[in-house]
Length: 230
Image (cartoon, rainbow, N blue to C red; front, top):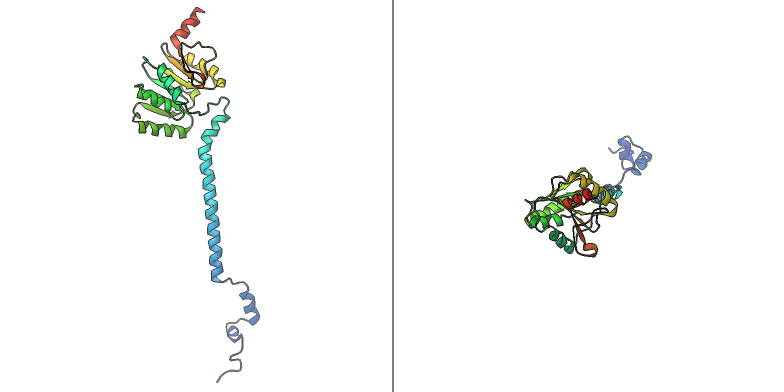
């Protein structure tokens, strides 16, 4: 026999111990499965987008810092690529020279690679690690990686006494300090080749080019001889 409550709305809920009012209240807090999935997808895309932006900012910071940091130093040696004419003039100043060569602030390695092709064991010191890695790649590509070496270093922390030929692309603010450093460290017979800006007190023994392509060559023997006579 069917009981008196059979077929009435909410009878099944009553059997589970829930009142119709409780059923209506609980129904307002349950989200459909499709809405939950949509919300989860939006959350995942948000995390992914945030991760991409964060990774891009970290990459930009890592790449830009080696270029920006030198500019914050008291004496800045910015990277300005050497022109083909400047390289040609430097090579001209190296004719009939022997011994090792160093490029102070070697940038993308053009001078060092050109010197290596002329038969010099050449070394470049550069503070920017990206430029040093690129220079090593260029030396490998040009087939002179055996005689062209590049190191990450601050030029003021390097001793140049072992080099017979020194090349520098300097700026006016550093030339006096570098002049004193090289005068103390270099041996007799060494030659210093300055590009773009000459040294303030030294008298060049040879000059090549004009304008921004001018290079000045200073022989330490001549300089020290003139200094003794004076």
